[in-house]
Figure 1: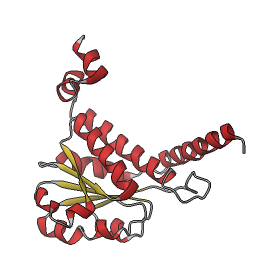
Figure 2 (figure 1 turned 45 degrees about the vertical axis):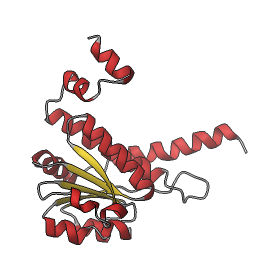
Figure 3 (figure 1 turned 135 degrees about the vertical axis):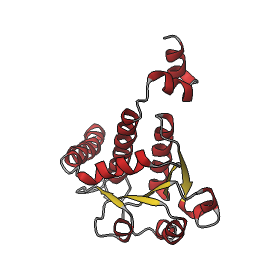
Figure 4 (figure 1 turned 120 degrees about the horizontal axis):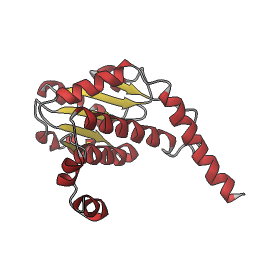
Length: 196
């Protein structure tokens, strides 16, 4: 096995999927941005497994760029953490298949609470996509690992969508460097902003 060629191959699979994603961005993305921008509560991001890990990063990025956001693990949600969710909050539910039981199990309660919901999934016809107010979907040929099973391409696409939402919302909110510094006073970024 040529190790460098394998590494490049993984990157090329993910890169080409991101490039493909940019040609499929439709009005549902703008609708999602409007829903989040009009939200008077917090944004709650939820998922399990690798989708959960990506969800944590999306929530952290949104929070640091001007959109009050927190992550709620879907399993913990159906075991009481839904008590953190209020009517004015908007919930982003992440599931590659759109059929993840723990994620779908949140929907009846979210409906009763009265939350607006956004799905991020690869399956347009999935239960999750059809159950949410807006569905942001992505498509890909294969996962990037040699077995074509491990969440690699799918998790990267989810992360890219989350970054795009966070960055666009930040512009809409007129978020500036001084605001970023307020939320990020530590580390080398905080140091750099302190010196300006």
